[in-house]
Length: 187
Image 1: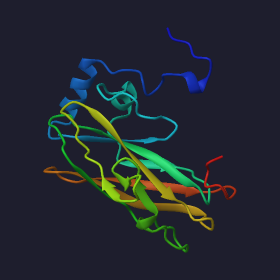
Image 2: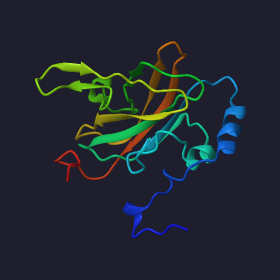
Image 3: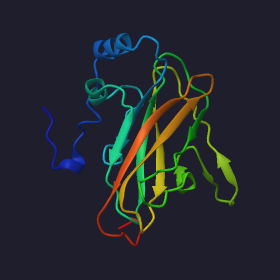
């Protein structure tokens, strides 16, 4: 067995590898799916790109993501994309407007994809090639700035569309509570 000094040193659950049989069984359960989405909290970073975590086999492909960010936090999560049956050259994401009854929306413009686009060292905007070979895994890191006055349960739909494939959506639920993080969570 493996033992870790603590949670931060542990390989589990994200680096426990699914067997080939477990992976084949997942594919057999979803015969028409050419790619899969697996949302994960930032506390479980996706580090394996050649294998599926056993956790994903046990949980199955998810259609929902839930977390509890603080007001004022720049909240980050990830969506694992598995190119199960064919390569994915390009991917588009559509960010949701998050809504909470009786509260101002969190606009889609508050979202960004940390590893799909950004600004280079010259201040120019850039798009990053996604390029994912058949059978490989890659995370899409997503960040959203939570307003300081936000409180309550906010929901919306995050959509992923690989080039030449049908779109898939994830329901995002953020239960915003706690104290305001003035440093956006950097500390």
